Image (cartoon, rainbow, N blue to C red; front, side, top):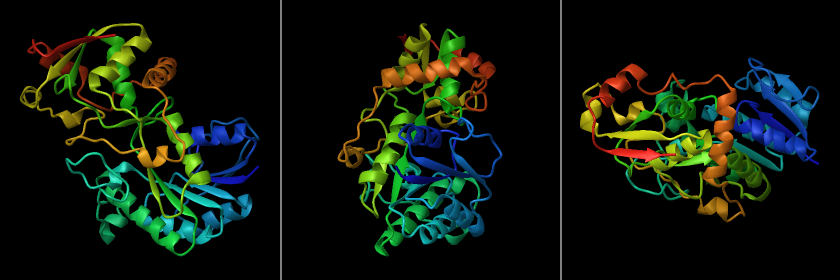
Length: 335
């Protein structure tokens, strides 16, 4: 049984990591701001409230937990990681949750650890709070991890891609599930071969994060995504099957989208370049991914019991229907 500290916790990936740790009998302390209630049974975790950007708060959490392992889900700036690797220099494993957005955005695929260049990060970007510099800051976080490992800290990085599954607060998946659930025709950017960003299931990401703590090498980064990749037609077909329905997918070219002032990047999970990541390194530790059929069934099951509709993403339905009325070709039926 280990003592574990989770910096950030309870909202998505961290929720599944912590639930697994509790099931296995580990002692878990969670450091959060306390703005949202933790989704765990009362008394199962110790909760330290505070701002992780404050060094004193992190030191207090370290004193309270005396951790063997630290999972850092809330490191948004390299200064956060630098502080953490100093405070937790002697733990058995410090795992920082990064992102595949740390890689430079090119048409080269797959994105491979140690081969694909990381984004640069200026001093201004390192201190920025906007999503525009998210990938730059995650890349800088990883460089801090690598430097700390060179100094003897058991620090590692995990780079998830677009993670989906129950309780996803981003609601990217909910946009598509809601569309398939409520409408007979759904607008999809690109042709039937168009692929979304390489997806990964949340429980697979949680298992990967724990596995890296147990088997990973200090100073290494590990991509996390499904072992296979799907087209949008595949994804929405699985959603329709899970909902017990069928749906007509109407594909729109860039020119057709532009008629309504839209581009493919207005839709969730769409990227301007092919976005496929290598997972060979993680698989070498003994990891594998859940089938998308099972993963989407569980994802859809949770969606229909909740109140998320993904309406903060994508074009509104009125705009979508205006374009659908003008499109006749590029149709797929799924479900």
